[in-house]
Image 1 (cartoon, rainbow, N blue to C red):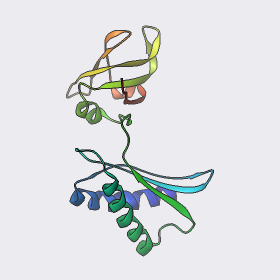
Image 2: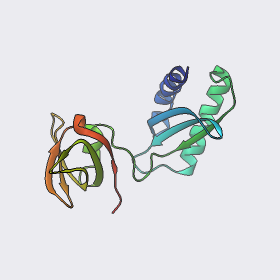
Image 3: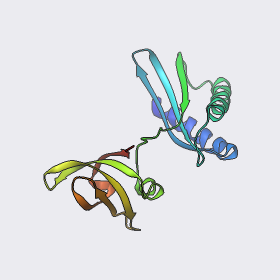
Image 4: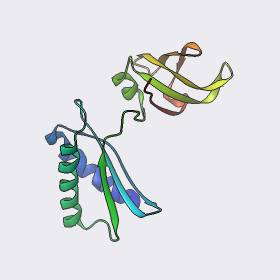
Length: 153
């Protein structure tokens, strides 16, 4: 049921947000200590403002009222993915070329799995080059990555 809700909201938000100058980053719907939480992460080239979050929250709330997708109580949260946002695909790495990232690999390179460094390049084939602070130059693909996010120095 949660997947259906996420799919419906993602589809609606995917149509709604471009008209607001925004893009959908992620939708999560999960049960937590305080109950069910619907999180919608939005992004904007110039940064996400409080007004963006308020506007999206208002639109999504109205949509959920009409569609009646969620049968129980929930909390709606709308926010940006944050300054240390996840890097989920090669396009994310391309977008943030020149920025610092923290990358955890499935298999170690030179005896370590976690690297912090500057994203140098991403090839058309998805090969990612990084200048790691404590290692030097290294290269890997998205399949090699367990977890990656931007890193503030």
